Amino acid sequence: MERRTIGARALAVGAVGLGCMPMSWAYSASRQRGEESLRAVHRALDAGSTLLDTADMYGPFTNELLLGRVLKERRADAFVSTKVGLLVGEQHIVANGRPGYVKRACDASLRRLQTDVIDLYQLHRADPEVPVEETWGAMAELVQAGKVRALGLCAVGARGGRRSGGRLHDATVKQLQRVQQVFPVSAVEAELSVWSPEALETLLPWCAARGVGFLAAMPLGNGFLTGTLTPGEGFEPDDLRARHPRFTAEMMAANQPIVAGLRRIARRHGEDVTPAQVALAWVLAQGRHVVPVPGTKQERWAAENAAAADLSLTAEELAEVADLPGARGSWD
Ligand SMILES: NC(=O)c1ccc[n+]([C@@H]2O[C@H](COP(=O)([O-])OP(=O)(O)OC[C@H]3O[C@@H](n4cnc5c(N)ncnc54)[C@H](OP(=O)(O)O)[C@@H]3O)[C@@H](O)[C@H]2O)c1
Figure (cartoon, rainbow, N blue to C red):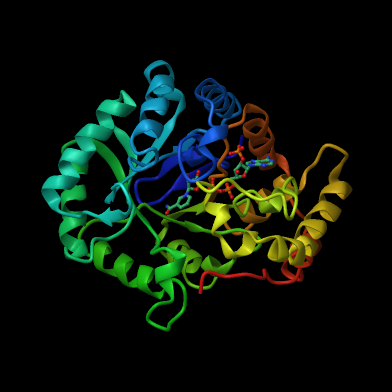
């Protein structure tokens, strides 16, 4: 697989990564299967998808434990990206960016991941009670201690991003400018997909201008862009899509022209090419510093997504995607 570099520390990874979140978080728990998830991780690594994206809060903790079982055997094949800063309670999720907590959380992640170094340690969300420079300073000390190789920042969530009335990523850019004064940012992670292209406005250019890598989260639109979901089928209550405004039966039906457009392009590239692969090829085409991290817990889809690294879209096809209707349904 083509290799791409992540940021200031010039860390090389496979062009398509693997998002591990669906294995233990955010999507229906009833569909999670540990053994199948392990096969998915192995298949991704076999295919050259080295970047495994997780977080201590996925599960919580069980996602890192699962990855630890693979890393114990295949540490050299993988690039581990995990996150700190969000604590999961019974009914809510809270931020914790206190330096002492960050350091303890890192040690705990290292133990669960069965490794002695994390390749990319990301601040999941800044703690409104702690100046972000203090949290970042503690993370920088982890680099100096050899526990972490590089630092990343996740974008402020879509719900909070527009709160100030500005553009979606204005708050994230402000945080990036602040932490960059303390220690170099190697990667930014934020949603980027055919139906959520907002990161192209400010975040991607910010990263490109500074040699910072960009990890594209939710590149398959939480599965919608794959064309495998049927409007009206519904989601189990613990699935994030049960509350997502784009996943009501009405909005899923209204957004079908986007999937149809991806399918049209896929057909041109061959019988076996899928809308999911076109969606990933579009993300890959947004810059050599961009690495999509499609999430899956299924071996067949880990293989399919990795193969998208070999699909390149023509300038006409990229324009065709740009001309697709905008997504209906929003958190705002
Ligand atoms: N930093 C942040 O704040 C943040 C936020 C959200 C996500 N992320 C990261 O981004 C990663 C990706 O996001 P995501 O997993 O939520 O969304 P996604 O990658 O857009 O979509 C995942 C969904 O698509 C399905 N899928 C995957 N490949 C498929 C294929 N080839 N054909 C059909 N369906 C397919 C998966 O099903 P199965 O689960 O059944 O395989 C899952 O339901 C996460 O895993 C996580 O690492 C980061």
